[in-house]
Image 1 (cartoon, rainbow, N blue to C red):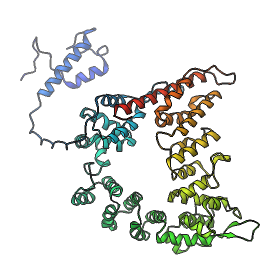
Image 2 (tube, rainbow, N blue to C red; image 1 turned 180 degrees about the vertical axis):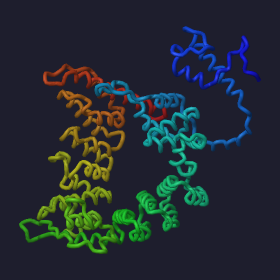
Image 3 (cartoon, rainbow, N blue to C red; image 1 turned 90 degrees about the horizontal axis):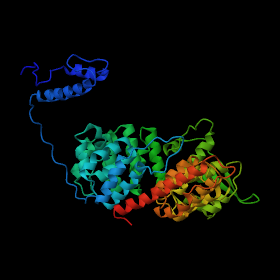
Length: 538
């Protein structure tokens, strides 16, 4: 075919020249084949369209590729129409850039997406096929969304991921095709364990441990001697899920591993099994260090730290070298007390309860070290009695019990309590100390927040408003409230959305900002209630 232009045929112009003219602009470079003036841009676009068709039509036909296998069927019911429309809105939202610290009154839809996904997964719905690309794009940008997105998206999403490199994370995040069931063929599980990518193997082990702990342990035992040290550490960490006394023989062998980190993790896991041999050895060592002095005016705890870290202690996970600025003997003592079963102390100290033990005076400035070790033990062993004793009352000075020396430790202790008790304690903390230090504690409370906790948060926000503070000083708590407050609390917020009279000592404009923040909170709560109804919830 010739390329000479006729009166009805646009001239054939090299593609590179068209791109160059488009980049420079027709006002700076008007080629001879384009008319001048205002018609030049239109002529350029017309010519580019024609040349695009020419380029595509000029391709030689290639052999047809192999048609991909159809996606596995998804037996779940599709979303109700209203919920499907809501999903589209949530996925299309793009967070704006706040100006001057103001967040505006409109809800942040992307922050509601995790909660929507959790509800949809709990109801057992499947997504509309046209929503899958947007779901995978959202999970690609936010790793925290991936587990919920992949559970919701189902087998079709994994089918798509095999065709688009941008979504390959889905194949690495799910074991096999993401539909593993406890009854899946053992041969298929073995094949994936032997041949899968490392992330797939970790995910597979995690699923097995959650469903059948013994099957996961047997899988790991079969290849343990051939795994790399860093892989052994990650695999061993998976045993935290479903940890059971039957894991003890395997973990005892891991105490002799070549890797120090593997040995330390094995020792930590064994110490969380109160009836393990390691726990008994640690109990004997710790009891030899801590005793009750009955000769004092009142019963007092005395601590005699070990003078050396012997081979047996090292074998059982005691790290011999302390961090900079820490004494060796106190470092060893803390590790021994931390690893000893907490039931040791009631028997060793005259049948006293955890509250009574924690209340005992401790000689020679060992109190903080001893109580901090008990805090770590209570968090590791998830002992509610000791956690309760160490937390103390939320209204005491600094809101910490005898051993709770940081908010992080309090949060760990709280996680060992039941949801209702946790909410009551944090509500008491907020009532006594306000919201400035409560963020980390709120993060361990069950969602939606119990009524007593929700009321404490809203009341404290109202107090901050009346004090004339700016709301962005509490933006973290406000963001948590939008996601965690019970939607029923929206009615209590109605009176707070009005702009109050500005107090004499208030920050300029703070009242208006607070009204906007409470409006946003109330709107978000109502939207969450609507989302629940659209998904068939009450």
